[in-house]
Length: 520
View (cartoon, rainbow, N blue to C red):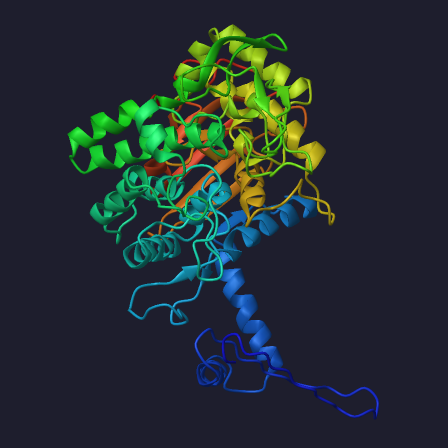
């Protein structure tokens, strides 16, 4: 099919009743001849059952890399493996079908969208199919080499959308700290620094960092720049990702610069602001450093009505540009808890452990939590940082029970290229990643036993002994036979193979309450 040239076909198969019809359709982004060639290479025969069984075997090979215990309920099996399936659908491998340039590098499209998938989908692909993750990252770096910026919401062979940060940085840092081989991390750092230092020149909605010059000058993105709130906290996290990769490559000057910039989220932390019993929130500030209690509503050049900005407001009614808000698809209650690289400082700024626990309880008990919004994905696990992982497990089990099932409405909100499904799959195993960092938080699993077949030939098994609806708390844990008292586990411990045994009980214990997850 010639690009931009309309074409059609009218086919008639007669009206003699039911007949079996076999059709092969070739698709190519390059030419009709390439489409025809794809058919001849991929399906040289006319045996439908062979095509079906080949496809089923490919998926079976992939999904069976994580096996669940035989006594797992049918509903849980459906939920878990559907989660893995959704995770692996995108981005799409289009190697050999790139209409933009030709080389031997992998080419992937439909990174739709990294601002969601970096949190769960990307880390789950690393566990299930690390070779594919390496190809995906090399494709991202190839896009950077050819087009100047890393992708964020790429689809249709175009870097077509940004939302908050330049979150390809998280994906690259996640691969780096998990020691994935076959990636040029010097080039990766170069690409990350391009995002962090060079304004995209009118393409702020497409790639790079919008409001970058203000961010570098002021330490925050001021109100008036679209999505100033989530851009500021995302850029701070992205800068943390850059710092970690720079440090690992021995570039300490860069590390010192970017680990300092990783604190920039604090520049929008209004410490004296109170709402629903909690104190301190990420709030709008103008270029002159003034906190804004009232912000302009709408886009009129003549009248400039204002409204009072509070942490519970989602400021995007139908008549206002929904991309032009302070926080995109969320409010300050949600985003003020989304500081994944520096939870200990977030706790301190919230008034300490007791105040932070109260804040979390208010968040979940007062319907401020939005299960369908990715910035809140990590929030149920934040009890880990105050030494109460059993409260994280309670929240997670309640969220899954109330929002996930096997029906057509079994996922809350948009699955977002497997982001929601991979959140579920991780928690069913009892693990949860803090993307861009080399560990997983340990929670009570929903499945009694899972076995991961790793690409290095080793296996890692998670077993929950005597787990039931009543015995839902981890009493003790053992890693390869030795007592394990941390409510988190390093990626290397999983990748080295072995077994994590969780002994369950009917009431919370002291397990996991003394050694908190790693600090910034």
